[in-house]
Image (cartoon, rainbow, N blue to C red; front, side, top):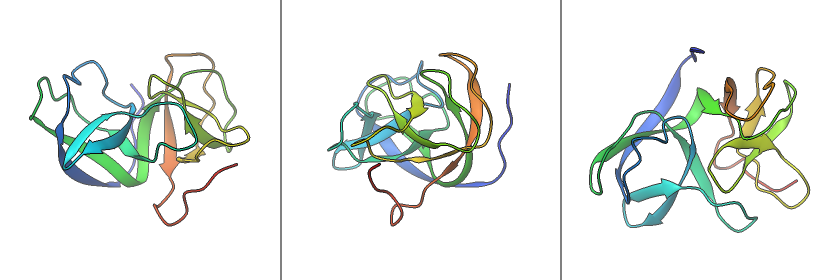
Length: 127
């Protein structure tokens, strides 16, 4: 498993069973609840899930700044801006997608775990 450096995490309740979604991109779906970030330019991702909350209402830790491990949704190079797909997995950002950070390693394929540097919320934008 890839190890990440330091990050800043916040704790929010899970809106669903997220036990199989550690290191995927999250969004806020209601007051204090997180779920998998969907794939569109409107959805604002808040960070990457660090643990495995296994029921609605369980607290989940979400990295919102710094370095984190993320699960890749496709191959991409190191140093590229990252967005996410409909499964909350990291992909190379393309036109119109929200940027969540920068890849620090190469992802060879869907399902790889790689390090990324999260963009701060003030730096988030679209390609």
